[in-house]
Image 1: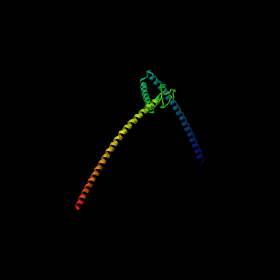
Image 2: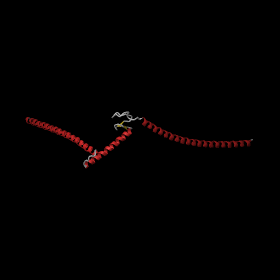
Image 3: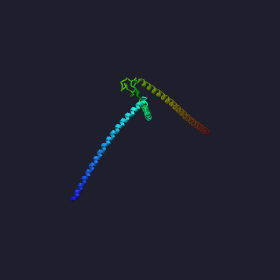
Image 4: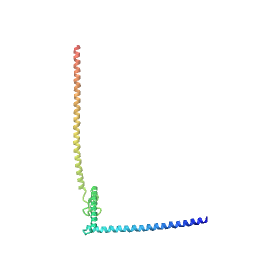
Length: 192
């Protein structure tokens, strides 16, 4: 039994030592991976700065390599598309541009939040909007009046037709009654 316990103790010790070594290795690997990620982020940052420097040279008209020029043209095209999309968003929101600094200012703002420049009066724009709305309402009213007039004419025609039919029916009944009365009068005459 003693041998068994000694053997068990030895194995537990070896296992503990193995687990400790594995944990140490795992920690060392994690430290190294962390260092690698840090170095990669620094490289990405430096590459981005390098790319920005090359792009700035391209924009200023300095000659850059053929491959760099292709990448710079693609970036420039995307920047133009981004600017167009931002302008569309601004138009949809009703924003305007500051005359002084050129930045986008939200609709209805009296002063530019970037430079403090007083924005042009919005009253003129509002008056134009009201005039357009009034014109649209006038057109809608005219269209509604035409539709109403057509409906009234159709209704009047239908009523006139029904009245004519009713008058014909009453006249027919009156003739029937007159004939019946004439027949009665004839019978009464003959009986007398």
